[in-house]
Image (tube, rainbow, N blue to C red; front, top):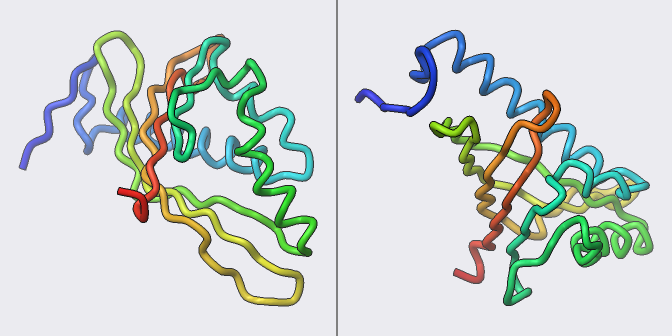
Length: 153
């Protein structure tokens, strides 16, 4: 099966150019989740554009990330720390689709899991995360994120 991707040069899934781009996007998400899961998640909004929108349940309307309205995202980590656990996110099954305007549309599975001190991890939620990534000063930034939980579908 041949997948046609819009963009420059050869961006088929088997090209070296696409492989390098895919690795870049994986690295971006690894860093973004590391910041979110860290003890000071204050830098997490900086991984989004100035006007980025975030959609997630149970919030009914998209919110602006940089306007500070994503406290609920970081509040989960604070609750787990207070309970003696650590909250982490894992990203997998990543699909990257370059767009003609230079942006990327991505879709992946995301797990939120808690690890108590001295105990085994437990999965809290399984998400589908759909993003629009754009280049900003040589780095990828999330311009729009839509998160859906599989148990609320």
